[in-house]
Image (tube, rainbow, N blue to C red):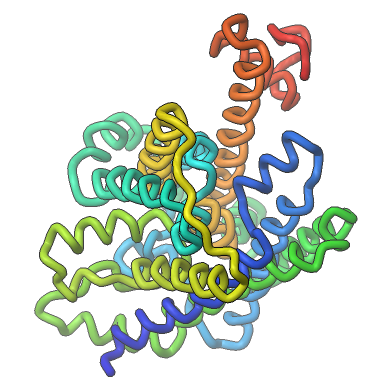
Length: 405
């Protein structure tokens, strides 16, 4: 079996397990924001943060043990995406995250949840997946991104290397700012941050009293670490060396872990190009694994059921949501898993910004939907938005335009 196929199948197996566990435990990042915003339950939000903490500590462990080389995650030629790149593209992190957060709320779930729902028989999610794939395809394989976004965003990017800063990882930024050259700073920071996030998660009964929340967060975080090991460990390094001598380099070979927006766009490209085997990617196999894992668990647990739209408005919201996830997920260089767990595990500053932007976009969309539902015609978009921002303590309470509900 070729090195490429070994890597692809490893990604499939990892997410097959993760997909089954995520369905069993109802791990859902959009649901996590919804629970926190609407009913004050932070259990699933803490499961998401717990997953990120496990991934941070796991990546640190891989490096301490000498099992992976994460320096290549800053290299645009070998990292997909280059989370630690020295080009600090702050506008795309913020806008991409906001668009993705809005999209995942309208589409009833993030990219990962969409795949899991497809595996569980949700026919609505097939349309969301198609719309997300179309958006991602436009961003990755056409000039859409360059024309609509990069044309005005690129001049705003900050090249950290111009200031003598090698990359945007937190330890590099801190070390460069304070003149700390210790090679152990990365490990110290990862350990401190990872343990602090775990302590925060465990501080709430909503999280620690739920075995499903603990299991779901742990397995998702561990799956991200396992995928990193596959692509940055001995097998991934051997593949990177091998492809350098190929006449035609396979698509998207490099250091990467789990992300669930890119595979939908890559799948459309694969179909469009006639099923060329060189266009099969790690992300595509990981996405397929999540669907199969969800399907197997749903069938075994007798939870597989078909679901359909409740009406034209429901259909429209899901299509728009899927498209925005495709656009925002690529623009922001990742989704709730791709940036919120995978990217965060590299300690890249941009990943934390994207993650917070996704949460904000989702929370605001929920608030706007709530106020427009309760107040109907009285609640214009502007009034609902200002009131939602006040609810989230991002604007003074005197600026709210509707009574709190």
